Image 1: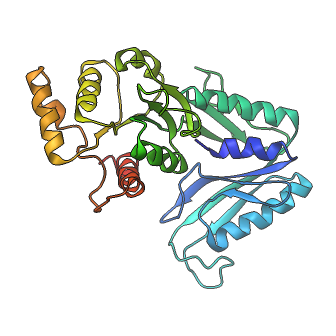
Image 2: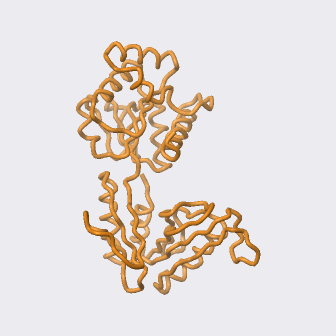
Length: 312
């Protein structure tokens, strides 16, 4: 899991850095409100607020902010209107706040933000536009501030629990981490589910699924991918998950249609309703003709993105 705040924390170890945040949009634009880009002390950029000439303008202004410390709002007109400085054709408009972060106070704030996000908690970041004020976290239950500020609710990145540490699980962890998921791995084989094979995982579990459930309650939103080595393991995991009070945003199971039917048949005999089973994404992944573990990981991640962004 790598968020803009992880990138900002790394940049601050090398000196001052600029955080560029999209604070307002209108019409068709390449990124959403809250999208961020970091420009470090060397001028290197991390993440993107949409690319193209608009982003180039923000980078140019950010380099000035790095030197002067004078934070500013940057307007990006993407309407394609003639005689505009930025000749974008998306059709919309973006406003980007560009501010220098530096010193121990900034590092402490970033670490507080990361502590919230990595433990599944949300945080409210307030960014005042006044020249003499700095960003801060709003205490829980405190009223929203008034005046010229940008208030954003920072949510923990989605968590993907991968049940099964085989070849597909290994490739899925790599790719899902790349697209912004925090990775958890479960497998009852300690020689398969290891930090060497899953360096992306923040936690690796080997205990039985029922003992795992209490550890998952704080991870929201939670996505679960069952990519085990055999249908009996899928069946055991599904039976436990479907009877628990655990909440998840996505639950998918690997396997052929025959394997899925076999598992569903056994679970219905165990008292799980067909309606409940129909909410599972099985066979897992979008149908793209995937064959190799790497291709299957792509199909699963495509489905994860679809559910995350479209609710499908």
